[in-house]
Image 1 (cartoon, helix red, strand yellow):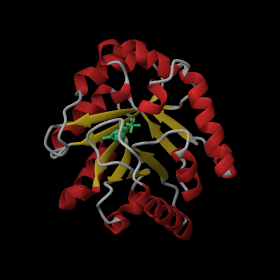
Image 2: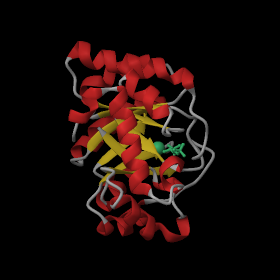
Image 3: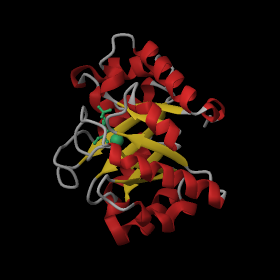
Image 4: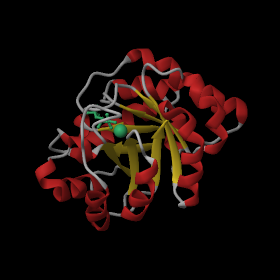
Length: 227
Ligand code: DX5
Ligand code: ZN
């Protein structure tokens, strides 16, 4: 399994310090939320910030684009050091060419689905992606409460994966803490993004270890799932 602290919950005036905290926490990935003030009602940071953080750690950079026109951002984020780029299924007809473009750049492809969006919209892309991200809050802000109605979507995505012999990772993002991680693990998630629940802890390493333990207790298969 993978734990991915979300940098959105870091102290933005001390980004480098918080990247180092995450790197030493035992978490495998760093989740980077990119918001454009249009697809979501908030703005975060861009490729120049990611490029400056890149030399600080060997962590896998999981870049989540909450942007209306990701096409113009793919190359800049690939060059900035993204290892995986996640786009949203809500972009409709743009999704297929975006997937091709991300692959052409040699990066892993993630597809995200918002809470109100039908998971069936992801179905045509399942054999083309490395990761499916089931959003468990409406994107735009950290620190929101987990939306329990999203759990059946996680179970559906896990069932598709098994029925079709596919290997995409199943990621959850939003309101993940030491309680909700258990429900997500039981539903089939294997990759857990957590912002507030990890960065708010003084002992981030202990918080990551505890989250891992809870997830594994709720789905023993997770102990074997490594990138
Ligand atoms: C929400 C972002 C999340 C956010 C999660 O728009 O996609 O990655 O940072 O934050 P928490 O874990 O605080 O809900
Ligand atoms: Zn995110």
